[in-house]
Image (cartoon, rainbow, N blue to C red; front, side, top):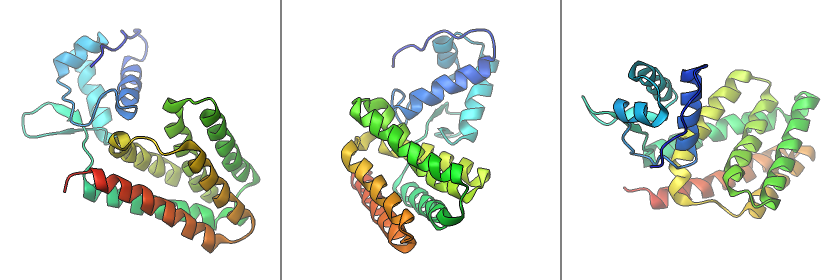
Length: 217
């Protein structure tokens, strides 16, 4: 693993959490990577007590976990049961957003459209690193149609956990992803909510089965 950049002296915990979170989500720190306090301290140039606080935050976010008693924390591994639970929860949250479309705040409907436009720009720029983040933003914008910040926070956490599972699966074709989002929004605008939810279910089933094929039994 490459050494991380040394951190500034302000908000060390927040900076370290952000840096390690980013490296976990983008795959630089692979699932199962051990994170001994001393090694993390050396990577980031911060004291071990600060490292403990950083790792505790990441553990609370579900990004790191203990592999056994007395063993250092490691980047979380997502198993098959986790994948099924994550996608089931995501589906219920996103269908709640879809069913709220007609009564959602205008700015939330506009934010959904803008999220797809941002994804289109990312795909057009061949910015592979940002495509997953922008695709996730599209899905979270659907949940935001409910008007519930708590549901949005929960959904973002689920997406982080899902990202840990998708690292080994590679990225789907960006143009297909965009077309699926566009079709979904068109169905919502046409008032065909059940059809939109069915389309969403089909997409999620395909994504989930893709992950289950590569995860060990």
